[in-house]
Length: 299
Image 1 (cartoon, rainbow, N blue to C red):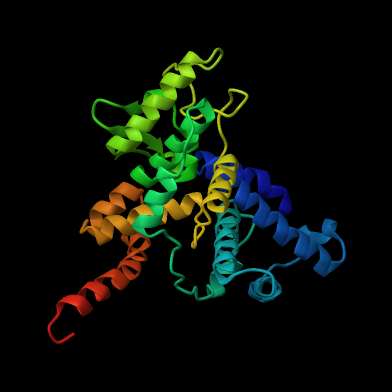
Image 2 (cartoon, rainbow, N blue to C red):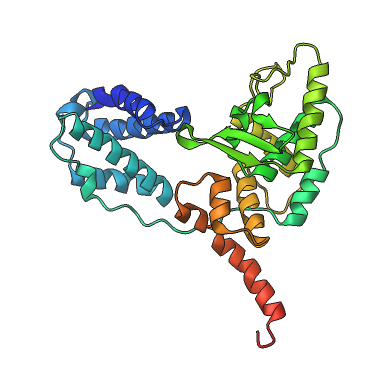
């Protein structure tokens, strides 16, 4: 069974267009499952002879319960379902043992986001005219302005920005291309950064070069952007620290608070399902109730 891991990962990458990050996550989840089975039978070499049924999978989920959040357990179970479904199609198994296991109920956690005043304080608090300082400001302005994922941000090239129309082309989950609008302030920061970068020797502005570069001139990573946000959170002593994905949550919440249609926000975020976008509505409900209480004569 474990010998099919690489074949399965190749299949989801090629046939379903899963991103490298998703494939790596699937590999980690499956390797963890195989390691658990190896300990259960006493020898990892005996995994392929072990009959994995619903009871084995439930025991594994029970083992995860003390170590992971419900959302993480649900994701790992989804990974197992996909893997066993693949084995059924290949004739390795007759049935999918994970189909008989119920997905743990996930709590509806409120996405972390920043109030508008804190966003402005964060963005206006970024000072400096060095290439790196201008880059950092352009990164945060773009994340908040476009509401894109950090992976989409660091994967963008210079040629993906249409300054004339105020648009940015990104590649989302499943290698799906989408075009998102970018505000004037973010466009100004991007233009200022790219001009400063071009003036610096060895830092090209070619259309196919990465939009955001690291200190050595290579493509910036998502981890580096996360470190940047951590640094900004500490420097500005934000009451509600935010991650790169938190800026995406902030974008969605502020759009809905401003009266944007849910379907429109779905398109901007690149969500395949409207239910994914709907989790932001209960965040905005706080704002709605606040307005109601202040405005309704009998509130």
